Image 1 (spheres, rainbow, N blue to C red):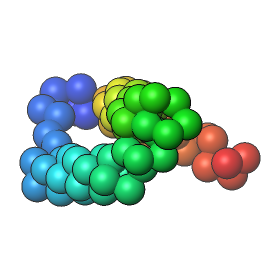
Image 2: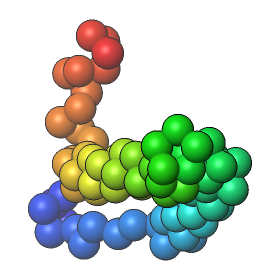
Image 3: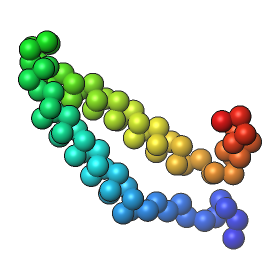
Length: 80
């Protein structure tokens, strides 16, 4: 069986834990920054929106990189 014939599988538990930690981090960020956001920007969700956007970009990037066969990253190992 070649690599292209293998079904790509993701570790569901790992994805669940990552999403759980991200959600907990966003809740904690909101709880600690809502007052500051309200005072400085008149928006208690200011920091949450910024971090949420960065989180979505990170998850999108993670999904893209996970789709690439890891053998293609080997030539970049030394420079990285």
